[in-house]
View: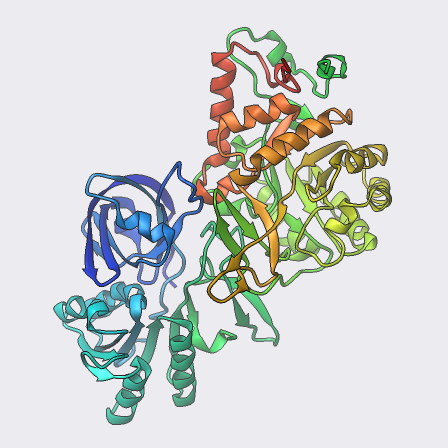
Amino acid sequence: MPTLAKKVDLSTEVISNELIAENHYLLRCSCPEIAASTLPGQFIHVLISQGSGLLLRRPFTVYTVEDDQITMLYQLIGEGTNVLSGLKCGDSIRVLGPLGNTFDLSVTPNPAIIVGGGAGIASLMLLATALRDADVHTLALVGSMNQARLLSVKDLQAIGVDTHIATDDGSVGHHGFVTELLNHTLETRDLQNPAIYACGPDGMLRAVTKIGLDSGIPTQLAMENRMGCALGVCLGCVCKVQLPEGGFEYQRVCTEGPVFNAKDIVW
Amino acid sequence: MTSSWQQKPMRYTWSEDEAMSDTHPSLEVTVADIQMKNPVMTASGTFGYGSEYVDFIDLNQIGAIVVKGITSVPWVGNAMPRIFETPSGMLNAIGLQNVGVDGFIDKKLPYLRNFDVPVIVNICGEQVEEYLEVTEKLDAADGVAAIELNISCPNLHCGGMSFGVDPKLTDELVKGVRKKTSLPLLVKLSPNITDITVIARAAEDAGADGLSVINTALGMAIDINTRRPQLANITGGLSGPAIKPIAVRMVWQVYNAVSIPIIGMGGIMTGDDAIEFFIAGASAVAVGTANFVNPRASLDVVEGIKEYLEQHRLHSIAELVGSLEIP
């Protein structure tokens, strides 16, 4: 595993904050320290509004890194993201990061299969970029409720990733679940040394885990949970992880994760 | 009401430095025989075992570190979800997931010995015997400055808070632990009781050296769409600014009921918040949930206290403790 960088907590200004799909925004800010050290899968913890009734920070994966800037792609989901979506260029924002672990790329896959459901694809964009940089053949399977909410397809295609779409309503791409696309890919292609990297709703991750385990393909999941501190202290973001010696323990998504080996997660 | 604080014994020892200094206020305090560079501790369960914060602050600058609650054996903790944000606060029902006393002594305490900061160990259990076992082990360990007895965790089905709402059980437990250690003994009180002074007096009479006031307030939140509780444990402990007025009130009540020093806590985010607790009767404070929001919160509170003392031309915290003016 690569060494994780020192965490920083800094105040910066919003550069842009745009609606990029129905109910989804892309926020850009300048964070040189975080931009320089963030690894695929890692996230930031954002203080949205000091002085309002909102107390806790909100965790967001780092979507892209461009020079000194980072972006985060987020879905409007509650009060916090609602306040966040109202931020304008020049507004200040506090960003703590980079946090969490990264994907295990010690064995080079061929191909790497990225499976993103909804805003979950945001956690896989830096990974796709790293795989492209390492000349790893990469497929991306992107699932969405509908065409209006479809995320990241152009960004993935722009870096040369072979991208396939599934929508719940069939408005674009495969009509059905992204996990059906995954099954189809595994059945119809001659894959030498595949590995799966997934992020999305729990139901999707469970289905991806089953497919990975049944077909013997190494599968890593980027988990998401409500978070308190994101520093490993409050123990509020844990997930149930199977232990090699039997039994289970609760591990912190913010510290031991967010990336876990799918075979270890107890659903 | 007469200003009873004036008749009270000092719960505070002046250091030579602070008695001599005319220009700069001294933040040094000795509370329940725990010597601290400043009166700001970290509240148990909000600062892990210290190492989690070293990217952000120098642990040597904190008054004291109170580590996550420790039990006789490792505890796995409650099911998810464990936390939920509420207006100006958060509910938690972690269930005291911790490494156990042996794990703490072997794996966490050696790291903390690298720092010049008092380490206070919060302990909890379901039975009196568990508290005694943990106390004996900590008493024998190197690097423990004090023990904080958690008789107020709202997320345990037995033990925890059940000790803290019954003066007889408080008496039995505090006396038992008192016999097992000569370390300073703090007792952390629950706000989930009609009259906190009853438990405060019981703890004092049983030999506590200081009181931590307060633990979280029992609360609950519901998802109205699914009609399910927001926490797997159904209820949880409310912390953060939402409970600060309750905490200030209880510190003031306890201050008027006992003679041992009080460590005030509950929603402290700033130096001004801490000052309120000193005026109510706390000799030191602990910063809790604020650590989740701002990893430098404890030191920001120290800085805020210092600024207040300077602005008000005060020499020490002692001049503030219990100084509530009732018109």
